[in-house]
Image 1: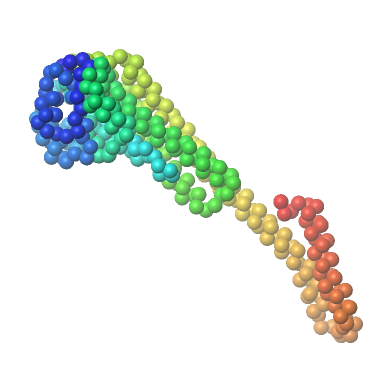
Image 2: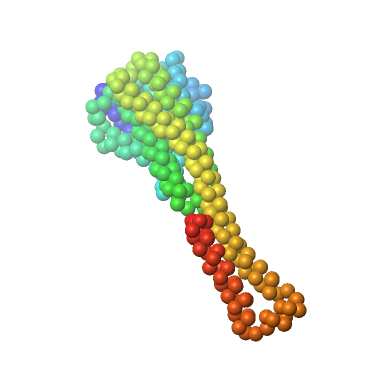
Length: 323
């Protein structure tokens, strides 16, 4: 068991980091970003990991979970963090494997998580944090969960933007954006709801590690509360996304209805014009003999057309067909 509050952070598998993980006078954090599988296997061999644990630490695409390897005195955790969102681009999920012992914790991930990197740099600068070993584990998991909270907040903000566009300008390009957001929310919800459940088992798994200094239960209750908040926000976002689809199609139908209405009004205006020109275009002898002067053309032809347009315009304006 390491000296309470004395923690060292490393980012590479080498003799120094492995020696620190085996020492009794400090707690070591090996934070490995995009390690080669051979590095993880060598680390596992030197630290005495179970072969199944090594393969789990290398494999990607696992569900969030907490497992105990009682015989080896280890706890294995799969947790998820998130990369920061950027503009319309949502946050990306980052799978993190954690191997926890009484003297060290190893985190294995394929991408950076800003909040986790900040914590590692802080520990690397201070060393003597004053935190119990389990408190270091808590803070690592807490940073991962907090990064997912940023992801859920971005989803909610993006959904509000799309809802405003749906109300003001429901164009066809909104549909692919809504579908993309729905897929992202469904993915988030699937992962984070499972993570919310699995993190409830973490205090028990750490308590089984006899050499690990305890953290206060309130710390892990805080992590659990954050995980529940993320899951609940995403559940609400999922319902709102489904409602946004209904709003979008309703707004699109209303917009198309207005377009059809205005086209109908235009066609209605041209209907009497068509009648007037058609009537006076008939080749009857009486009409040929009596509607022959310029005055007759202006009175019957132009005048009749203008009068019919004016009358219809007044009727349309009174009935508010154009609005």
